[in-house]
Amino acid sequence: MTSKSHQYAFNQALFETGNHVLSKNWLQKFPFDAQSWSAKQISEFNIFSALQKTDVANMVTNLFIPNILRCPHYGVRDYMAFCKGMLASYRSLHVELDTFDYDRLLTKIAIPFYVFQGEHDPITPMQATRMYFERVQAPEKRMIEVPGAGHLCMFAKPGYFLEKVSGLRRLVLTI
Image 1 (spheres, rainbow, N blue to C red):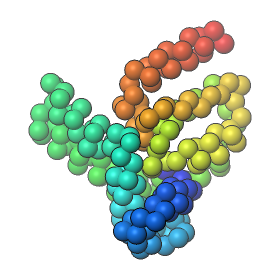
Image 2 (image 1 turned 45 degrees about the vertical axis):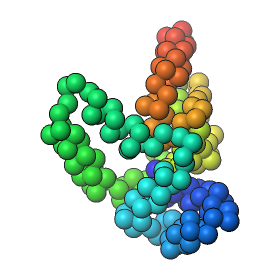
Image 3 (image 1 turned 90 degrees about the vertical axis):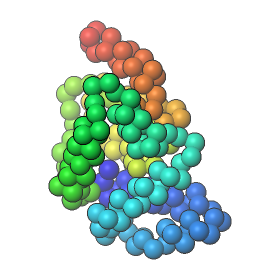
């Protein structure tokens, strides 16, 4: 989730809205350059993007909330604490997250490098992830596309995720 990925997501959303006048008008309230977006604009855009992807599980309403509420070890107070923690984390870290330059930090590593990417991620689009992935140099690297999943692919498709992680674990142990 960087200004680069926000820009890809914004461009993709503009393209996908096509002739849908309400969506296109709503998107046009944002500056075209995502690097100039405020935290509030980023948050609004992320919500809008997630709601537009009706063919994938919404990370909040379909994944987080139901799973937390079903957990026998958590009560309402835990749920409220979780939500408050997510908001506090975002408020504290959004500037760093939105301006972070991954290329500056990590493009050459000496260990295996694996990325799991939701096929229909509206928050961090495949294009942004792929561009970064291709720049990373590692002795072994793979980008695993999780079909039919969005931003939280490991929660949307846990069986698929565990199957792929298990395969990678066996691979890494033999290296």
